[in-house]
Length: 332
Image (tube, rainbow, N blue to C red):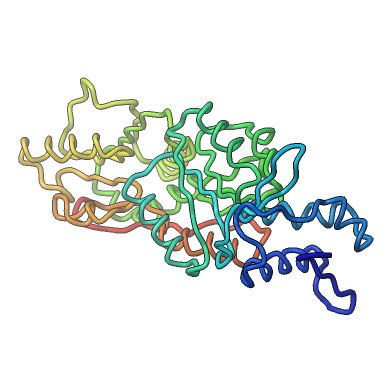
């Protein structure tokens, strides 16, 4: 058959031989953009193959953007860019400084034959759904960050199961998929335990937890630590009408609240690390220098990106908890 060669004596899967045949025809100039390739039925009949075998080959070629289909007419060459081994769809919740570190690390851990398209759903469920539905069949791997969304399995199941990777949160309904995740409750509890001697000098520990897109596990871990170790504590939704006093330590999730506590400390001449304590989450370069350095509990975003890339390269089907640590600086 023109453009397709199958050799039963080779130890190469038949679907891979179909893909390689198309690549060789493109590289040799025998197939160009717009050219029609043999149909699924023709290949099945010629080489006595199942439809599933041929469809696997066609789906991968479509995912790489090499071919496209026209209903009722067949499959055509869409691109001659066959130097790409992987085309990865990445769906983040939002872009911020630490997500940028994660994404940069992920890109740097991939080879130059991989392209990545990144999208953001901004915690909008309809956008999340639409982006996933529109991406189906176009990529060799899918990295999904569900964030606050629960019960998304019916949407994510529209993608090929063997190509899906979940990032950042461990979701019960997505348990069948490989994931690199943070254990927010354990990370906070363990981080505070590591810093317990620093915390003892404060009369009260106060977490400012606005909720919404923030992981509830952080609040749970904070409360559990305070109860088990006998700390007086309080959990607030905001700092509105809250008087910040000497002898308190503040645990802030948002950068906006971080700035407010730092400004108040300056206005009241409270020395950070002795008169007033501050601990933030998700380490960034900025937190290294603000007010002489802000103490953080943070997962290792560089490591997360590296682990994700390795998981995709090696097609690992595992659950991996990303490491987290307490980073002690001047503010505590």
